[in-house]
Image (cartoon, rainbow, N blue to C red; front, side, top):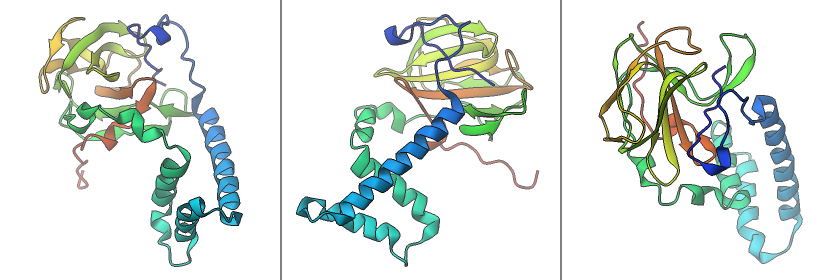
Amino acid sequence: MEQVYRRRSISTHKRNQSHAPRLTGYRATVVKQSVLCIILFIFCLVAMLSTKPELQKVKDSISLVINTQTDFKSLPHQLHGFIKTYILKQEDKTLTGKEVLTSLGVPLTAPVTSTFGPRTDDATGTEAFHYGVDIAANEGEKIKCSAPGKVAEAGESADYGRYLLIDHGNEVYTLYAHCLEVLPQSGDAVLADQVIATVGATGNATGPHLHFELRNGDTWLDPSEFITFPQANQND
């Protein structure tokens, strides 16, 4: 499993790269999601039984979700929107003013072969959480910077191999790992679409590919929600 990157440039995350990450892992994530579902159920129950007029919009939303004519294929999306609107009211604010997230470019013109989220780790055969996306390509192919920024770190580790961490400002970072070669050095300014590395299989990798991460402060974001990656050829 590719371990979480530790940014030395952030004071709250000063860790030695040999240390294990402090993330709780996939099982803890499932537990947190289960607890959130229970809290959501209790909240909905209390809201539906309440006679307070200020909760009427909440009750209408709940009624819409559980209505028998609801398209159950879209139910997960509706629940996600409901949670964001009424439970996690601060969530959207974390992306406020981070326009760079709306203009990220494709770092490598090739389809994603391993997505963000739970997956079976090739090395251990166990289920783990993948904190980025993998883009497979031939060794030596050019990797481009997704947005303008500054190289926060250029280095090498046992897990990531040769990597680049790019600071795009306002706590938005992109990470490019398993590179055969990295071109800029720490502190260098980089431009959008500038070639910054080449595809390799350094570090903990089973073949040539780019491991690409997108971070907003202390949170990992799914790059596929902000970047339209090429689709795999269905005829292959």
